[in-house]
View 1 (cartoon, rainbow, N blue to C red):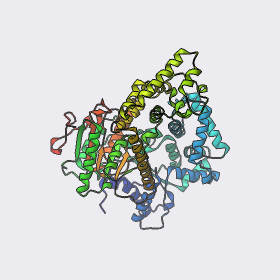
View 2: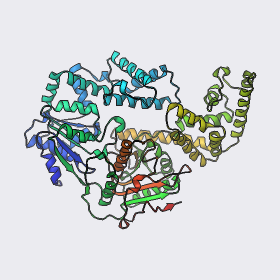
View 3: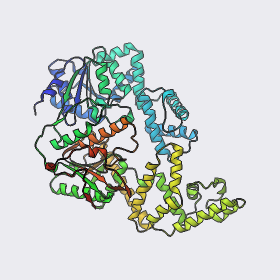
View 4: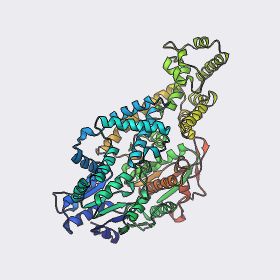
Length: 633
């Protein structure tokens, strides 16, 4: 086994008191944690049962335990490895005699929130999307211990959010149920209000080690501080430059907060990257240095050999060219003997993967999506457009016509629809005393007859511009207080898909095939999460999903302003998190890093990402300068 370097040795042999280990990408932090546990047990004779190692995922806890067992002389174990939720539930179980039956099931929670939302009579186009955001908000309020009166909800009015939150909690309490966030909050309240119970757990675990410390939220940190007192043998390992879970309440300045809370804490920097070559480490460093809210550090590569073709920065005229190049590079790497599983394409959001996944399917290149890829054709906006087409083609079912009749607003009341099938002549009779309504209905009839004769691309364009659906989306976005551009991009993507379809018949066949392929991909993702052996396949995942992983070859497509950094990132803190995400993506690559950006996205000019311009390039690495990009058409 490779010897520990000086910094790793310093971290491993730390004994008592608080310690902050700043661990850069690929610096061997897992080894440091497991070696330190072995050191405490074998050299310092600490009882194994008195050591608690906390990780963020079950998979990480299992891997850490297995690696420790391979290192340790003793095969009997005794050291406690677990996630925050597992540890906190263990404490609650002991105090309140909870069992697994007390943990709310996902489906029950979803149905409960769905009912509470419907009771508020909010006007929603996509209920599931709203529920996803609502679950995240509830989690954030609990995780950061925010008082409801001080919380501003971007989803709905504060009064409505407070009502849903309060009724949700009351419903759980009545059934003696807790969700995952309650585990954290209840554990904190228990330890704070019951010093006797707190002391018992302090004595149980005199040594605490925390992995990925930068991802901790406020309530998790507060519980750890209670558990570690009074000895404060708290050993935390993390990297503020890899803090990318702001939406869950984690903040990069938690590392700085730790040093304020424990001014006598030891500090150690693991700054040697054993994963990536020197060119990649240097380029990543030139991006992250632009963040101000960070502990200063300079990461070096263990492999200092100059690497040819380590980094490629390239501009493309359009997305199809970019996708074809990624496909060709993947095949070239495979022919050079690199397995598919050593290649990854990292996206800022999972919806970006749609067009590339279609290209890979075309060429039978095996790939696995780590996260579920939402089907574009299931989105309510796309369903609206397709409903317009179906109605134009003669479908007059009441539900179909009702869906589109007021998108855009035509002020047609649902009382006008008395039969299972709609007759537009009868509709006009219903409004015969209102000439302006008859005019609107005649205009709609004319628009539908025009639409029926169009090919897919022209039809989508006509629905958007001629019928006025884009304007409806802008009004809806304004009503909801959300960005219209994000919703219009769904329509841009749909229109791009329509471009390659000759007829609606062909398009419907394609939609069905695509749906089946996505089903297979979802199954693959589930098997991957269950730890089943995977076929040799290219990994497609988000930058969030790639954290902690490594690949020989990494592709980062669409490195444009509005994508990465994301258009929603306005505040400086958000922009710094976007930069950290890009840094995480870059540092997944061991030997080859390809960063691609577009001249046009959905036929609109886009700017190169500021993160690309921050990467200084040099001629000896055979790179293309971002200031003078080569355009591939």
